Every structure is written in C-alpha cells, then in structure tokens.
Length: 280
Image (cartoon, rainbow, N blue to C red; front, side):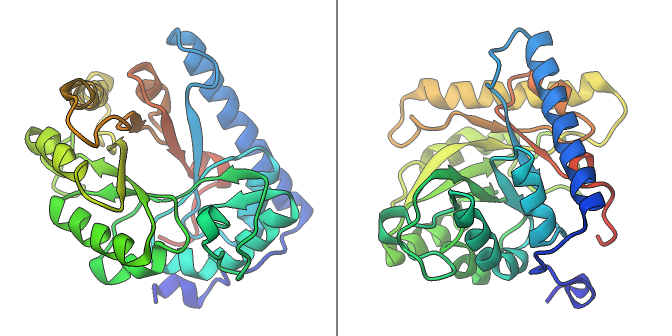
C-alpha cells in the first residue's frame, strides 16, 4: 500500500461545502481554458475532452468534480483504483451515470451490479502498471494509457482474453527523451503500435505523452507535434487494429493550451481542478 494511503481515507464520500465549491470552480475554469484554446486553435468546440487526474483525491472530491461537469477520470495507481472503485460506481449510479466498465456486456461493477444504465463516464489508468496489478484494474477501467512496451501490452492482452473482455490501450511515448519519464522511444512507436493492434483483448485507441519539463514552449510543442504526426502515420498505415488509434492524450495543467494547439484530444488535469496535492 502506498504510504499516503495510511493517512487519507480515499473511500471517504463526504466533503464540506467549501471544498465542493473550490473543486467546482476549478472544473469550470479548466473547461473555460479548454474552450478558449479550442477556439484559438481553430478547432471545433468539444473536440478536446477533459480527464480529471484524481491521484490522492477521495471519492467525495471526485464526485464534486463529476457534479461540476467532469465526464472522464484517470487514476495513477492501481491501489487507488481498487480503493475508490466501489464508492465511485455506487455514487455515479445514483446520479444516472455508469463509471468505467460497470454494466458493460454483463461485467459486474465493483459493487456487484451488472445492470448499470445511463451516460458512461470513462475511467482510465494513466500511471504506470506493473504486470502483477493488471488483474486489479481490468474489472474497473475502460482504458490503460500507460502502455509503454509490447511486453506489457501482451501481458494485458492475455489477462483480458482470460476474462473475456476488451480493454482500450494508449501507447505511451517518451517524446521529451527525459530519463525521468516513462514511455517508449519515439523511433519505435509506430511499429509497437502496429503490433499492439494485432493483440486480442485490446483496442489500440491512441497515443499518450507527457510534455517536456522545460520553459521553452517551442520544445514542448515540438514533442506534441511529433506525437500527432506519429498518430497520423499509424492511421495512414492501414495496418490491422490501427483504425481506432485516434486519441492524443497530451497536455496537463501547465501546458494544455500548447497541447490543444497541436491536436490533443484528451487533456489530463489534476492541480488546476483540485489544487496542489498534500501527498505525492
């Protein structure tokens, strides 16, 4: 168990009104930033989706974000997925939402309910996934954005096939080349993506990257632009299993406008919604 989970009850469902307003205000500001960036880039309104990055946030905080308009969430750690899934699915169902894979093709939700109707809120894993944790996330998440190797994809494929499910995956690419970041070498991304597209139990949905941690906006945009061009080449290849590789998950609190200008379809935002984390 991650150390901070000893100090914060992530299953907590009750927050005070002040905190709920803080989160709602954060969501609205981010949605306004996205809309403004779409307009500035000449893109269609609604072409970029907001994923709320919910690392260290409890069920009550996440539900406040959903109540304010968030329609996609992402967790960094499988342990947090497990800790929050039951409460989140139950509270979402009360609001008429189906979270993650709840109710998909008879799959039982974390609360045991296999009949969940309503608007679906995708639930993604956006942090690193060890092979021994695959089984923890498959019953909950729609997509795993942090697939950074063919080896990991093959392991997820085997587990998905054994469960009789199909899970979305995004290939994570280390566009910045920073050793502190995960992701495959950009030079190999197209070939890896094409091979992932052939695996049973997986749907290759797109590519993901983390922007360069530098102040040079040109360098940050260069990485985002390269990911877009890589995505376009994968689609143009026409290889089996690549036809759904359309998502570009790139851009966070500090660089989402740059990412949107370069074609992002999903921005992953935590701090601008929830504030600074008390735990790392």
